[in-house]
Image 1 (tube, helix red, strand yellow):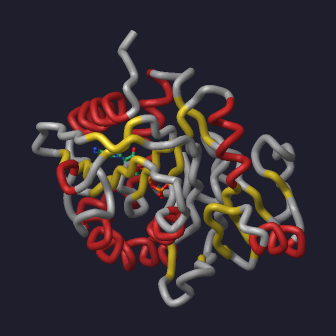
Image 2 (cartoon, protein in one colour):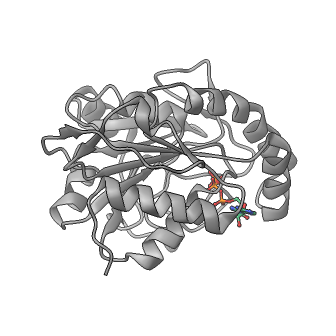
Length: 261
Ligand SMILES: Nc1ncnc2c1ncn2[C@@H]1O[C@H](COP(=O)(O)OP(=O)(O)OP(=O)(O)O)[C@@H](O)[C@H]1O
């Protein structure tokens, strides 16, 4: 769903254009394949509670507490690992439970894009001033344009009673984790291997060769981050899609105390 030029987002995903390179503001040395959007969060108080999912595919849940009352789900993983695919299935199955926040960008709107719906379109000066005032949970520069997720955008989703879902890259996660009192439930989606990741990206046929290589080049680094104890609450190894989705769904439902219909 996301990642290609002019690809339409599930909601608000940071822009992406062929041949561009994303440099993150906070960690400019690390190249990101593209800024990903965070969606949804709940800034309510989080009562810690032990949570352990007895699944071979879900690792890491015992390494930290999973918070009750959280309404923010952060999903991260290398490009092509299957984040969009898993989230699409989750949104399809629970349309009234989850929502994406609307990101800000300084790039120009495309023909079909509606301000406030696809993105909040803004200027560099305005966005930088808002960042300086601490209004953004995460932000990045991509292809000379700024992208970011504001706290307000996340809160708007939460106010609608939905769990906000953020699909973000490693740099975004690093920023989010620094936000006080914002204790998201974090899921890392891991491909079975780098070789399989490359196959899936090639099959998706959404990237130029340069883009594809850029994504693969950072994949191992992202996996290392994802596997570092304490960085995520759950690691989903996306080998069989059905199995991965079942683990993902079970973990998310339990984490957010969602009762199946
Ligand atoms: N378990 C799976 N087995 C085989 N193919 C899969 C599996 N999961 C996802 N795919 C396919 O792999 C490709 C990449 O998946 P997807 O677009 O969901 O990745 P992504 O992590 O969201 O990537 P990006 O960050 O670039 O948006 C898609 O073509 C998808 O259909």
